Image 1 (cartoon, rainbow, N blue to C red):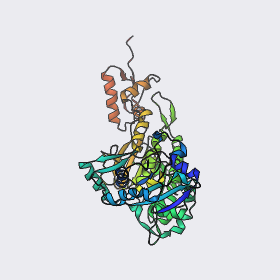
Image 2: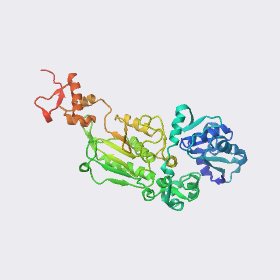
Image 3: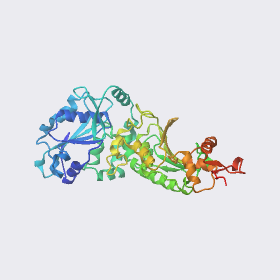
Image 4: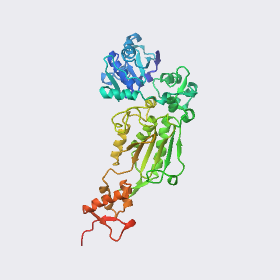
Length: 467
């Protein structure tokens, strides 16, 4: 617990910070129950910070006038009591008391940092709350059971590294880049200690600190933790050496840079792949950039860093496949991916979200965003699967329209269509399944086989009117 002064610019940045999954702010008039609910909700979710002494935007105050802190630290003691005494069990926290430099009359704001906990925390009245977006949501029954199971899933991100100390971490260029925009301004040693990126006794850095800020995490984490990107010139289920185009790329570096570089390289690779549109024209594979970004970000922040393997991104002729090491954590299943959330690496998720333009801006919305953007592009939604020890996401370049509609659209501008062309347009991989599409249209009287073409050269055309 410490008291310090901050510059007016830092104070204004704190006041103007938008409420989010990781940040909240309350008036000094908020009671202990309000503070306790926020603390419990953050500890039961992914951790985060909140300030007491900042008025809400709806209060009528503007700018720094919203900074209306406590007259003395003693007046804010109820905040600590709510967090450390009344919550059951007590919530893990650190606290700072901040004054604006040269402006004592605005008072002291209490900023509390809550760590994600291994326990399920309850308020004094026995209720359980979790942070979801900008709100604290009460849960009961099976939801509490699911949370308890998730809490039992230990994260490798907390593992201390043998040969990477606080002196190494605070000299990293990425940490310096991050702290240039971090508010309030904080010395690197203070920041990494406050965020629990180092072991208190040995001052060895944990895995999360290396993943976020080390120049080359794979050099200090005893596991492979980069990204491999490969291009396969095929539509087959598996990529083979004889269909591999060029040398696979390896991406290493801090998490933010890995995400940016991976998206850049995959996007360039996709631009070189052409596919036939339903109207018969050829065009580069078009994936919504937001969908691709969300899938890559999800892989980097939620992968299991205890599995010694890289994330693998494969670009095929008809899809992009992202393979993330590790099975689903906690209570997560393939069936509840879009309705439930659990962060395997809460420290990585929380601190990555503190960048000025964080890649994980909309916490909990990533996969839903990918679904929505694929639908807007009239492409089928992503598919999820578990394969061995990997969580696999596939973005297929398959139109959302029914195969029969795609066939008829193609025949609006072409005299005939073959089974091979039909499969390329619709994303169907089986020749027999494609035949069934043609048979449905034939039975409806809309297409017929092209006379004189049989076997491998057989084709279909729109029905030619008699006479």
